[in-house]
Length: 468
View 1 (tube, rainbow, N blue to C red):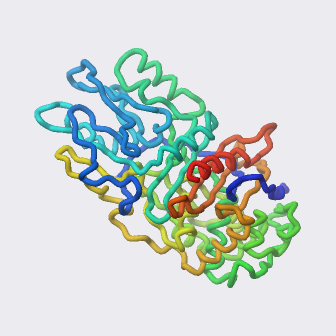
View 2: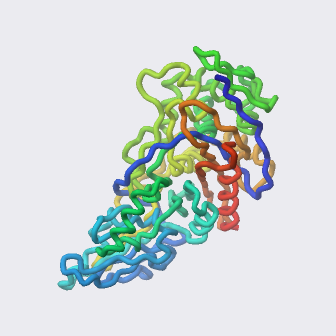
View 3: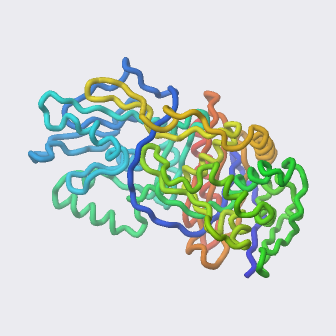
């Protein structure tokens, strides 16, 4: 089988990104963990401005305003029913709280804090204050619309998650009670073939395709395979996958023995497959795991599904395919935002979190117990490697405000999935000077079965515009 990469198409956009095509997905159910952010940011909450504890259910707060509420339910065992403001917009952040179907997301992780006052007796419920910026959340949700996909914006320096969107979304108010209409809404939700209840930003890992070029490039520099991003590689065009007659080709002539800088600019699959084969499985796996792949305990504080790099006895062909984000590589949008954040942050990783502070029932304001608030930044790659990748991405950006490159690759055929998936990753400074990384995934973009990354680029553009 011959797999063909189509030439990068530069789009008229205010940012430069990595929009890439992938195939297939793996649905996951929602589970919970614990985590938190580091330090105080623009929307950090102090004891002076923290929301006061309340009777009934406490609230989840975005930019100083609750996006949840509660009302008497009329049921003695569950005396309060949850209500939501802009429920579909924030469902990926809040999760749901239902009298009949339990809790997910932050509603589950902080159930004891949020429900401490529901039985009265002088107890009060506390609140959860998030890191979300509503203008970014709204821009991403509006741009994604009803399409399947996800978007994440991450402060590279603090780990604060500024936007967390999964589409199509759902309204958690529709089944928060205990009536026949709640049951009907729930049944419709769980039977929907688009699976809106899955948080695609955190809980669905798919092939990252050419966004994984960043990890391969980092490994090549870290392991000394190439001295710099400007050293020519030995990878020919076309490149034959090891042990097969399958060729990786490209319309871009510069992809023949291209340097890493050129290969990133033109999305040269042949180069990164060849680099992966040269590095070998153990070296590439070590770098991928340094970026957080194969870590099954990532909490933000909701548990993020594991992003994976193949382990065990991996054939040379699969190692080469892993270099182009296939061959068993799987990643969530949040993980790819983390990868870009590491490069932007000089090679250091800061644990991400969507929670800024927790207000307890006695009024005490606490930072979450896990995540960046309790862990120092972790060195993933050297500052030199990060600097070289920053230089290569800046060169590919052609002077645009965000660092990256833009293009699209036709989806391959075979056993990798039934619909194309476009990826876009980028980073830049917002108007406040903070380094922000954005990752967007859109499933089934384009028309007539043609993979086209422009939907992912358009979502990214809208998010950067919201920060300007």
